[in-house]
Length: 267
Ligand SMILES: NC(=O)c1ccc[n+]([C@@H]2O[C@H](COP(=O)([O-])OP(=O)(O)OC[C@H]3O[C@@H](n4cnc5c(N)ncnc54)[C@H](OP(=O)(O)O)[C@@H]3O)[C@@H](O)[C@H]2O)c1
Image (cartoon, rainbow, N blue to C red; front, side):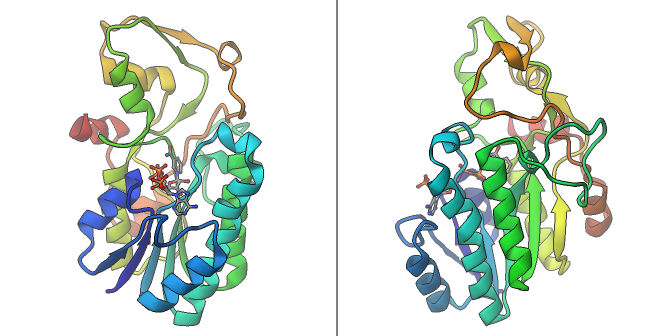
């Protein structure tokens, strides 16, 4: 199976490249998602059977002041990849986000719950989903959340770097921490099972950023739980963005482990 991968230096792209056998792995120097010609040329040259789009504009707060770029990379580019995948009869695998939801639901979000993003980033990712669906290409859209890895830029590494310092961490946003390794491994399993559609791919269980910080730094660390209103950010985030992974478990034919077990394997 010939795979074209975008975002090879990102958290998920990095793990995917190492799990795939026959892969053309690209960074933005080769395939720039803000440049339509670069996308079309690279896909046509590689002639993949599967395109995995692991690249994205992921700076959630910065996106509020860079709306055009976020929309080009997260909204328009997936649509162009989808058109090219359709020409080839290839499967497009694309990652989306829990931030397509507004967080008002009291329980975990299932795949066909109504979307209503609160941020430019969330809206740009939702636009990417819409363009892929509108293209009619074979697709697997994997919504995930709170991605971390032992490399890259993420909450886990930010907390580790502040070990020993007093910290204030938000305790009124719930979600599911997800390691890039978990995502990459289960993406490969889903490809092998020929799964298509929209799927929530996260470990089981849920926590808050405060709970995640406790798991990272331990019970002895000096961490004060705070409310979102006490920590101003440019982008609004949903209070509840827990994704329900039961459809993924059914299609994978296995239970997905609790986020703490997944974290134990990384941290
Ligand atoms: N991180 C999260 O918490 C989170 C949560 C939910 C969903 N997701 C989704 O999961 C997927 C993977 O996220 P991740 O955490 O692995 O992201 P990441 O670590 O931030 O990596 C994103 C990658 O995209 C590349 N990129 C950015 N702009 C580009 C452009 N114009 N052209 C080509 N490449 C470009 C970056 O390249 P450079 O290295 O050159 O900057 C980087 O390698 C994304 O679709 C993201 O939206 C992530």
